[in-house]
Each structure stands twice: as structure tokens, then as C-alpha cells.
Image 1 (cartoon, helix red, strand yellow):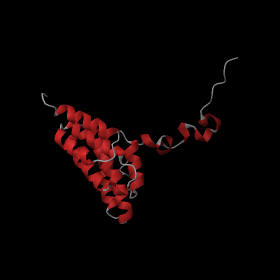
Image 2 (cartoon, rainbow, N blue to C red):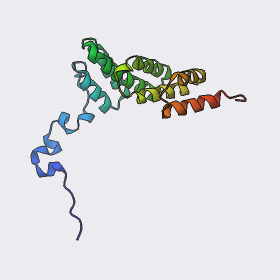
Image 3 (cartoon, rainbow, N blue to C red):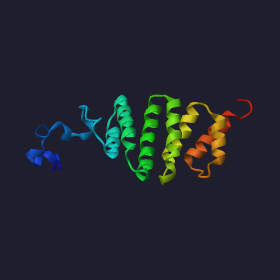
Image 4 (cartoon, rainbow, N blue to C red):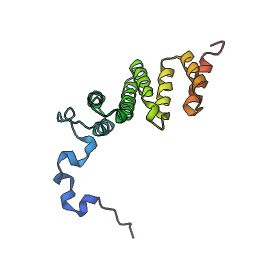
Length: 168
């Protein structure tokens, strides 16, 4: 006896069929920008839109708007969200191979990282950008100060040490 095929959730309730839903509700991550991104004044919502968008220029526009919106946030919330926005800027620039811009954004994010519990992601990206820029001495200096000894620390230190070894 063949196994009964599972029907999609919208097959059970006709009102949930994709044709019946407005475009914005079908898949919120695939919605087109209708000029609404500059009208959003909630940084969390802007960050969610950035995470759901694959278009790099749209991501940058959303992140720039998020920084403007953050100026009106209370200081205690501003640090965390500025870290999140700067981290995403660094990721976008890294993907676009704009390593100097990514480095600048990583350094900005690290300034706001004191209120963030887990900064492993930004540190890994920071070291990775430095590797792309072949900043071996800077990597060695930073890893000497870094007391976490995590994976990004070891990986970066090993590469920098190898690349600065005599005979290279």
C-alpha cells in the first residue's frame, strides 16, 4: 500500500491557497520593495527585511535607513541594534568583495559589541576580512590580545603565522 502523500497546508483550507493570499502574505521574504522600506521606523523589522532580501543594493538601502532610524532610539537599545546593523553591513560588503568597507564595518560593530553576549560571528568575520586583506601582522597583534582562543582565533593565528614565517 503506497504511503499517503501529505497535502500542503493550504489544500485543507481554501482561503490559504497561494492564489487567495495577497502577494505580501504568500512569502514575506520574496516581496518586492514597493518604496515602503523608507517608511519603516522599526529597526527590528528593517533587519528582518535585510535578512530576507537577496538583492545586495536593497540590503544596503535598508541598512542605511536602519542607521537613520537608530538615531531616535534610546541609548540602551541603540548599542545592540547598531551592532546588528553594522554586522550585516560587514557581511554585505564581504560578499561583494569590498574588503576595506567590510573591515571598517567590522571595527564599527566591535565598538558596540560590549552589550552583546556572543560576538563570535563578528570576530570570525573580522579575522576573515583581515586574511583577505593579507594583514598578517595585524592578525598576529590582535590574536595576542584576544583571550578567547576560539576557532576563529586559532584559524587566523595559524594562517598569519604561516604567512609570516621565514622563507615565505
